[in-house]
Image (cartoon, rainbow, N blue to C red; front, side, top):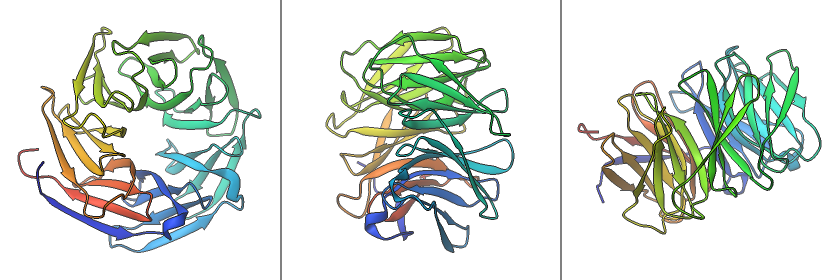
Amino acid sequence: MIDTLIKEFPVSEAGAGPYGVTTGPDGASWLTLVHAGGVARMSVDGEVRTWSLGAPESRPLIITPGPDDALWFTRSGDDRIGRISTAGELSSVALPPGTGPCGITTGPDGALWYAGMNSDTVGRVATDGAATTFALPVAGAFASMMAPGPDETVWCTLNQANALARVDMAGGVTVHPLPTANAGPVGISASADGGLWFVEILAGQLGRIDPDGRIREYALPDRSARPHAIVGDAVGGAWFTEWGGNRIGHVDVAGRIETYDLPTPNSEPHGLTVAPDGTVWAALEIGRLARLTPPPQV
């Protein structure tokens, strides 16, 4: 366990539930409020503004920068993909009933790709709102998070199928089973060196898949930590949250792991992002954002 500089910033009431977070094209931190049905923005100087989606049941989860200088996010409770401009203009795209969108990322084709948790699908939404759905070849997969791949693809975790899915731009799917049984993959992120990092929430492990399909797994010091989200750094490693362990962690390209305790107990860290200045920001469900300033060696 390493102590380093971590500071927390209030961004909402505790019950609002900050969940996903990303860095917007304006340099601000944008986050979803899963329980309140809203989106929030914290500027680089700490000013916080929130927007209600007008649908408390919408349960916004993951948020990502789009190709159009706006932010796009999944609304898992009412089957929509939301969009908010940096000026705060809101709109949304309806998906088939029962989709349950979770992860979302911008694909190499300039569209938004999402994972349908409840429908065994992945989908594509163009910036003009045109939506297309593709079936996964696995039943009960619980498709969770998404990330761009190194080869004109997107990838998603199949939490209940214990696998990763590679999706090409035509909707073709290749499934990669994980070595550890019942590992429960959730977060996934592209790596700076061409692979992808992912977390195994049930196994207490991190994983990495190379472009050739080779999978390596790395046990966390605390196997009960329940890793949740992960984001690649600039040199081939990654940062991750430990939802159960109340920590932020880092893994380097050699698989060496360091963890950092969050100041507030039981803060429930979920999504995280790396800002342009290299600081790491994590959404805490207790109503705060945590900023970690990495030590020089990381």
